[in-house]
Amino acid sequence: MNDLIMDFLESSSLENGKTQLDLEAITMEDAIWEAIFRHGPSANAKNITLLMGETKGVALADSKRLAQIMTNLVSNAIKYSPHNRFVTIASSVKENYVHVSVSDEGAGIPEDERSMLFEAFGRTSIQPTDGESSTGLGLWIVKELVTLHGGRLGYEAPASGGSIFWFELPV
Image (cartoon, rainbow, N blue to C red; front, top):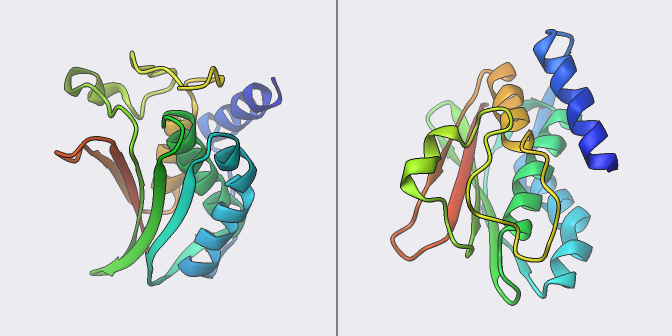
């Protein structure tokens, strides 16, 4: 219930243009470690291993908003992954951006539903694997926050299955 209320408050702030950024240089390795630490208990409950891939880059970002972006992506990866799987978080530098990816071994998103991934209340037919709740706002909030930072984001469907959600922030 708390997540639902927080998502609605955040969406209202974003829609009204009231979200302010306090930009600073953030080392992606630190941001990824924080995400792994924060989500360890929920991952452990499903015996999901959180892995840190390559971690390169320093982004110009708001630390609170970056943590929010990471939280939404990592919690979704855990929520939609079956027990006993892996979630990998990595970062690299591409041109003038830090590229961050969150990869999971879940069911993936059906091709005909991918266009609604980053829309408010854009739910897909894929359900959380352990009865977790979903507001339908998390990925929309990610999109709005990444855009506010001057970044971009996307989704990839590996041939081997699962999902890769990624975003890029200016360096």
